[in-house]
Each structure stands twice: as C-alpha cells, then as structure tokens.
Length: 381
Image (cartoon, rainbow, N blue to C red):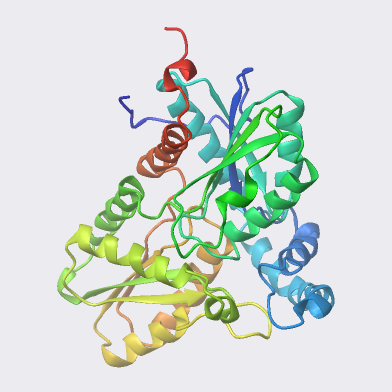
C-alpha cells in the first residue's frame, strides 16, 4: 500500500468526529493538569503508579510517598504551569496529533478512527477502552506516544491495560504486540484467550524509536536549527526525561533506547563534532538516571566558553512544562551563567509531518503483523 505524508495539515481547534468503523486507534500519553487546581491530583496519580515508584517494599510506602511528593511539589509545580498558561500544553497538542493522524488515515482511505487515552488525567485509558467496547469496535490499536520503552511510560500504560484485560477477559480474543524486543518484559503467550467466542482483538505497540520517519523528524528539525548556528563551535545535547535509577537496575531498557535513538540521529546528520546525553526532570528523594542535563551544561561551559549549545528534547513528542519551562528558562539561565555563547532549543516534535507519518507507520505494522486484511479496511472509492 502506498502511504502519504500529509504536508499541509492545519489545526481545526475542535475534537474529531468519528464515523462508525470496527477498528480504533488510541494514542496514549501521560496527560497533565488541565488547570492550576488539578496539579496536585496529577502528581499524586503519577507517583502512585507502581511502575514509577518501584523499590523494595515500595508497596507499603508508595501512597504515603505519593501524597508527600504531591503536597511538597504542588506549589512549585503550580507556579511552573501558571507561568506557561496554567494548562499542560501536552493535552491540546496530543489532540492535534490525533487530528492530524486521523486526516492521514483518511487520506489513505482506511476505515479507522483515532482516539486519545491519558494515564494520569482524563480521559483515562480504561474509560476510553470501555467506551470503545460499548461502541462495538472489534479491533483496538494501542499506540503509546513514548517511542522508547520504559517501565515508567509504556510499561505503565501496559500495567493499566493489563488490569483492564483481566477485568474484561471474556471480551478479549487476542493481544498482538509490535515493536517487541527481547529486553522488553512482556510475554505475549500469557494473553492468548481460550474463549474462541470472544471478538475483541487488541494490538499493543511496545516501542517505535527505530522508525525511520521518527528519526527523520528529529534530523529535519535539528538541521533547521543548525542553519542559524556557527557549526565550528556548536555541540549537541540530547535531553531526555529521567527515570528512577532503580528501574534501570531491574532491567529497564530506557537508557539503552535513548542512546540508540541519539546515535541514529547523529548518524543520519553525519555529525562529527561533540554531542552529549543528559537526563532532566528528577522528582522526589530517590536516585534518578544521570548525568543530569544541568550538570552536563555546566561541564560544557567550563570546558569551552565560546560554544553554541543546541539542546534536543529527545524523549518528548509534545511540548510541556519540562521543555517550555525547564529547558527554555532554567537551563538557558544555567548556560548563561556558565558562559555558553548561544543556547538554542530544538522544538518538540508536536505535529511535525514526519512524526505523524511515523505514527501512521505503527498502525500499518499492527495491521500487517496481525494479518488483517488491509483491503477490507479500505473505504469505498
């Protein structure tokens, strides 16, 4: 099947209208505060997640710790969100991504509808699944907007989906997995239903950082930013969201996936100069994955005052407080204090045409891997 890259999509500023088809895609993201008053509840939901707070005997301390962190961080986080408009930009951007993906699906004449499910705010993943089952969908593709796998992101979404499947096991006939790698702890055999009368088939995308269009989305944006910099004195810093270090010790492949992603981008750029990886957005008293982005910036400044620094938010497909506030304000100030000549940040991927194409590619992979008859999903021309 020929695919189409949509090059002229414009936000309509409204929710998608859905036709009655049998296949649905759920774009899964974290969610975020929809107002200043919802910051505390968002933080509590986040740190109550056993995939995020996961250390020996954590099941005893998780909820009290989540309560403590959400109360301690509420004022600071609320001020951060207030400074960027009070609402997490991740929410409207995710809806725009769904809208653009739907338009690309429609251009390719596929009978598929696109929906949104958030992990820590409404609409919650489980509620969207309930709604789609009630509407009669027989195939649901679950596509996390986390290209690299981590226990704390894709793993957290899978944790929630597993609970839903267990509760609704009489409905689910089969779960297919794409983007599955040996280091990802999901056992497909454990989710084959013995009840052959059930009709709902679920596809789950585990990781997709290896997608060429995803890599192209970064190289395209980076090249645009490099065009305004003196390449002789420019270094690239990939900044990824950090995760609790205890997860890495338990086999979380996130750090490896981030490194592989950065290497793919560097190779595609044919970049021969210095580049770095840092991790940002640590929360709470536990140890998180390092080196921290702020420390990397300080070290670069100490080594070379006459340097341009191009920061690439590598694990963020949407702008949110970590990019707009943390990188653009806090890290830019650190760079200035450490004598860095020019500090430039590449935009998050947001609705870049190559990102939308990469999401579309994952849907096609799911259809092909589950041996769906793609012709049957074509609209009548």
